[in-house]
Amino acid sequence: MVESQILSRRHELGYMFSTSRHSEYPDHYRLDIILRPTPTNMHFDPKRVFFMVSDDEKIEHLTISYKGLHQNKYQVVAGPVRIQDRKGKVVFAFTFGGELQIEVEEQEKICTLISPAPIFQFVRPTIIWFIEEVEIILAERFAKWESEPHEFETRLSKVEPLTLYAACLESLIEKFRHSLQEYTQDLVHFLHTEIQALQEESTLPHYIPPLSEIL
Image (cartoon, rainbow, N blue to C red; front, side, top):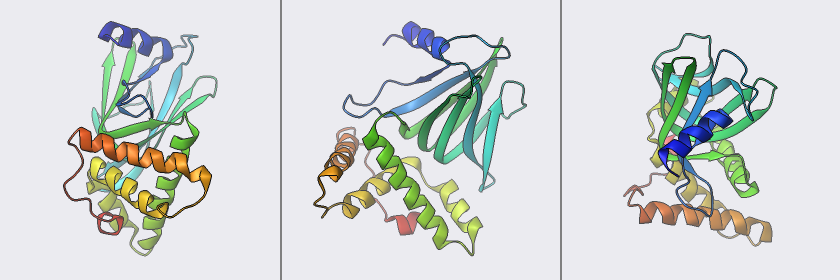
């Protein structure tokens, strides 16, 4: 898709995921969201967007609207992304972390999330299941640091998105390795497909530490 088509679609939808890394499972490295001061009455008209960000290694929930004053850059950590429009409709995504850039151009506030690890939109059952499993992993690791929550937040702030992503893939491959349930086959296929994609792109970390070491 040429740049002019991308910009046109982004303006029409109010948000835009970058081209998927491969066609079988839609995963993306960039997400653009446009916030405007007045309704556009277009297909999707974003009013607010929600991220989880790190501020001095402390995890906070960040809400961005057109009128709010914000920094130009934020470090986004692994977690959900929610885009809410003026009619209450919500688009959900999940990121393993990245850099959020905010720019104001004329009557538009453009929020751009860029990550070395895939950004997933909640569009297919297999991807939704994968995200749910990752959220279980994060919840379990948080529980391990229940007496020292700041330690978990520090670790989550410091981990490289691609390392965390690869570690989650490996952990879930191990979890479902011996499953005989037919309904797990799609998820296992997805996990191996993503690992293979990282290998083909030469972006798979040489050493993937266990999640207990990362978080």
